[in-house]
Length: 119
Image (cartoon, rainbow, N blue to C red; front, side, top):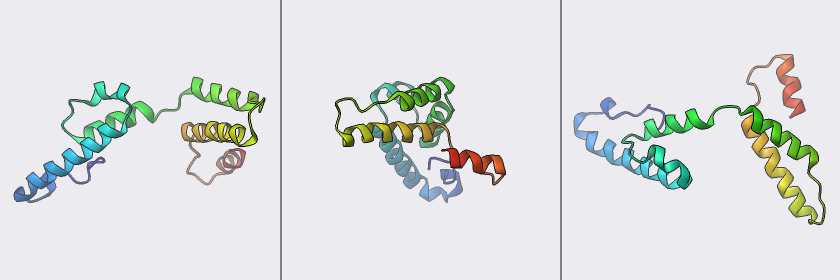
């Protein structure tokens, strides 16, 4: 439903009601999964695919300033008075966010392998 593979036009006309119900369920699931601050931009959409494409457009970009700040946070993070488990959890969260923002290349060239090893 979200990538456009299953549009209602692909089915027999008698199945269109079912397709609309499934779209409504998926749309409801997406709206209940996003943060309250994002609802304003997607609240009146009638298609799960439109909402999904909007969210992909918003969040599927590499944010240079955020990656720089994450890299800086990771480099300067110190345990201080925190327990090892709290410190490691914070560090792991930062690593995971960094990896999500800077996806590994899918090609198998030498530079790509170096980058994956670096990550």
